[in-house]
Image 1: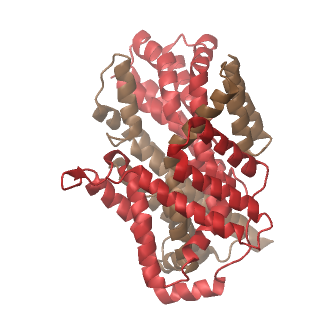
Image 2: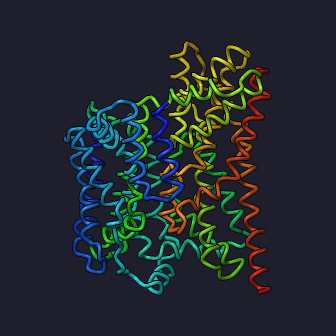
Image 3: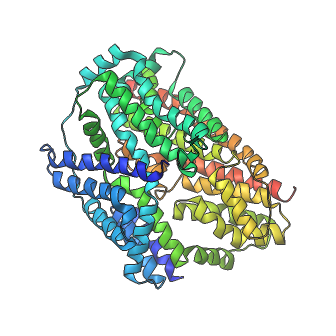
Length: 318
Length: 226
């Protein structure tokens, strides 16, 4: 059975190759920093499942030190010139889109058809992880197709991948770092403390105030935690269920559904949701790492207002 | 209450623009200590969660594939392709992407899209190509803004489409949490109540995407006047 572990080994090998190539990149003054960073990241993927929690923690600490104290650089070597790329684009035309689209199409087909596929009685792959496994599969297929068609130097995909990875740099760690911080928050009871503040200090004595506090609370708490999933149980246990539903007789479905969507408004405006907001800014080479957030703030405010109004007008009627 | 100190560390660290990795590590330490957890246990908890969340970084595997195609002129082709389609402005292109992203997410295909797979190699260069076809060469700052809007279309489309699908994580989380609290709800009814917000999101963000066209026109007129 193909499990997530196979994809981790694939990723570990790719990041390991970034490390080796970095070590030899003389155009990068901090090349040893890059080599160590990608090497440790590769180690996490290759061996993380066999290390103890503490060993994994020490590994993260080393990654944080390299990324946090500015020991990462960037090579300056370009593989092809803009003129070469334009000529290639002209020559190959729209066929260039095909290998790029292989990735999402494989994910799509994998999710639809491979989830319950069996070969000789055993499951082909771990059905719970089908999206991520299909993504790994799609990348492999896309690479094979592009290599066969374009015939670039053998190391080209790794060199180009490394160039893009260096553009993202330490920001690549953020999604996992924030997920881990969320785990420490949960362990220390941060959620409960926020719930206490919301119920003890805020005026919640009218149906409207309860809805207003719940919706804004969901958005704010999501912005703090970076994830509406962490905010929902806390805010709903503190305000949603006891006040909106039980005290004022609101509908539980309307409350829960629109409450979660109010949380998503918070996701749009927080650097804590790094994979949606900070990593794209790095991927798109924006100089301001909050560039994506700034564009999303007006939409988030308008949507939160709409959600609050929608919940107030519907929750007490259904 | 002291456990909230970590949130303060986080907010201040982000505000004074320290390196986020250091800020997050400090916030975790402060939160854990305030919650009476021994430092080594905090480190172990952090390491465990980091290891378990490796799946979020698998998406970076697309970088070699995307890089290889960019080397062969993928971005240049994406720009030229959209410039050849007359009538496709930046705003209309991103509006179409927002719409498709919402529809696909609503039927459970939230994986069809994404910042590394779709926005960086295809959507952002297409948006820039559409803008340049209409307004001519643009200053770098305008390119950055267009790319940020492309990223926002992906996020808004995914967030406010996926909850319409009954088997998505957030809907299942709601059902599970409410069940623990002794309330039984149907996933389908939760999904139905996600539709009004999805429609509002489409109109609000879609209108802002269309306004981007006007903004570019104004900027162009201003640049011409100078």
